[in-house]
Image (cartoon, rainbow, N blue to C red; front, side):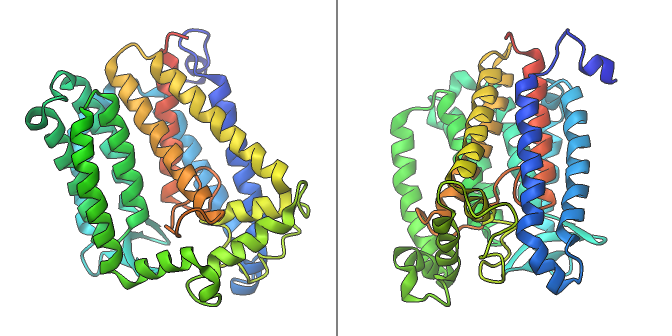
Length: 370
């Protein structure tokens, strides 16, 4: 299998593969560095999150290589089944006794000692289905009735189910990714303008309808108004990034991980990177992401068919939107959303699905005319 995988014929983009492994390695190191103080106190095991992250990484790497071996055209045949399973999981997580509540959101389904997050599966499942849908109906996408509206039905049905959990951050990533794919397919700007106005009104309604979302917005505007409440996370994040300076305090020498920044191994791991590795370390991570997106877009542009182009665009858009949202939250540009940093943040479903998505992207690169 590996001889076939790395043969000179249809070889994957080694630069893309190397960037993925480098980001994953940085993530493993930083998950340990940011979490060992907390886990030593809570679980009496400083390696608790490290061991789990290594397990998730191993499962994800296996999934990535398997997905790299599967011709991306295979997903055409199973796209409807994949989407149906994703919708069933999103419905199942809403059922008491099946869905698990964490942080006020019913977003997980327990599987033994671990849990899965169906919304993560939906992001990839909808990309797979939409790539097939858009590539087969691209000539109709300028028609509101035949192309644009059917696409919206799929996207906003999934978004609605995710919002019932509720999980606004994941919903934004899903909608943003799908809108990029639909726009690239040739949808009319007039349709997007109308959708944007409706979306803006709906977004405002979602914020004002939930007190915790409204408090996040007010905390974003002036976090020091409630420094021990809603503004606590962003203030501690800025306190981490600020002292990092050019070179950082040194790997393992973060101060904010000592019970100041809540669970820094997840959404705010970039804060610890900035504190320990400084501006240069944070910039290096951002450059790696930029290279990842460039190689992914290049693979998509060189794909031999429209299906491959849309599939690559969807995966790259999903990852880039997550990175932009996460970094923006960490440096205080937007309110807290609860979005992880791909490849780096601690997590099971998120990391495994991200690596499997990367496997599909690598398979597209194997067929690309580079």
